Image 1 (cartoon, rainbow, N blue to C red):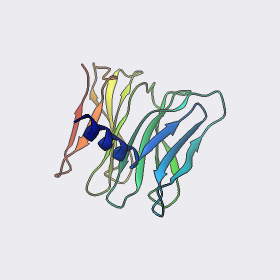
Image 2 (cartoon, one colour; image 1 turned 180 degrees about the vertical axis):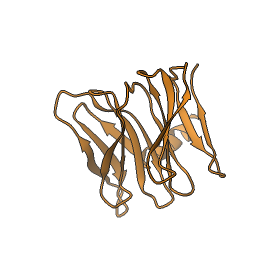
Image 3 (cartoon, rainbow, N blue to C red; image 1 turned 90 degrees about the vertical axis):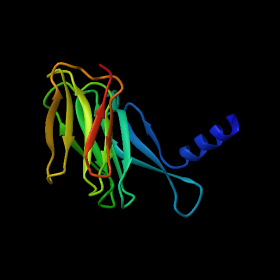
Image 4 (cartoon, one colour; image 1 turned 120 degrees about the vertical axis):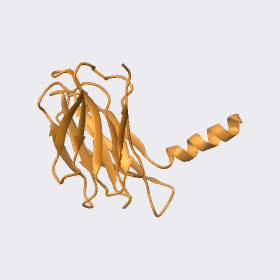
Length: 165
């Protein structure tokens, strides 16, 4: 059984692996032409900033990648995608201290859903671009929800969020 588990983990690593450092959020993606990994910088910031932490990744039905992550220097939620063919990073929420894990999923219409903790407002938050622009909603106003946030979208495009209480 151990060999089967190890083999499965190795296969998963060949799908998508994320790398971040204090200055650059980068991504390793498998090359379609070979077994080699392509390395792309998707967002960068001046050195000495804690940037690109608490990442989460999802792939849409067109095999485009969507990533949510934090800019810890300013405690902002950020998002990057290559849906246009090039990496486009953007700021989603800078309204209050965003601290902790993010979770991202893409529905069957290729709309993005992100859950994350907002410490400034002490709320578990939900962000989506399902209407064409980003809409931010507080889900649980008294729970920090900062540990173990996980978001999934079912086959009916219903969003499900779980977190540590």
